[in-house]
Length: 111
Length: 114
Image 1: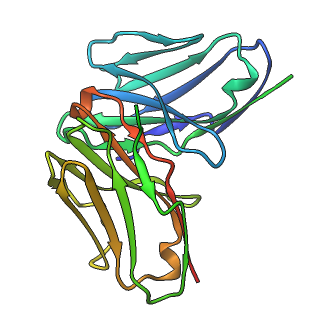
Image 2: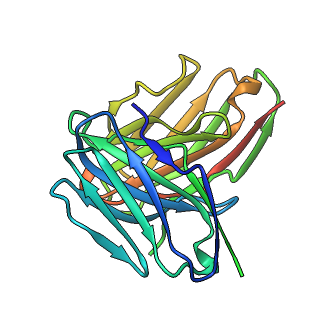
């Protein structure tokens, strides 16, 4: 039931782009994205509701393909501050509000 | 505005002792979630409340764990008796509208059971 995230880790140079994928085996109502820095709490980035909408936060955007139960997070022109672990949380249509989090994707942005 | 407040931030105790973790959600939020995070198992939902009522406690590991929400501004997670494998970071999060709203996490309680 836990969504599958890929890749597990990615190293970027400042200014480069990256894509993080999140895939679920269940029909989804929404997908949440969070970023967690070492020793800190997860911080909300964005929610995507079924309907395939795309959202953005600074130069971070995401899409949601409800037919494929997949979401992707796009890091564009990465900044040092983008370093951290990114988690997707999926809310299945039969589990109102109960998020299942993926294992996370560690992102390291270097100068 | 104050975020989700958890206490204590750190707890070190010996195996067999009772541990109580506390959480104050953001005012006006009607959903509250308790999570546990470990390297091995990642971020796991233990229990969540909606309007102070437990909705799903299927993630609670065993009977040694219990959670209460006596009112809209306070929740506790209790472990009795504690075991070394309970060592983890425990997060409390709250949201305003279930699946449509972001979850705001507290700073967590880092629990070590010796």
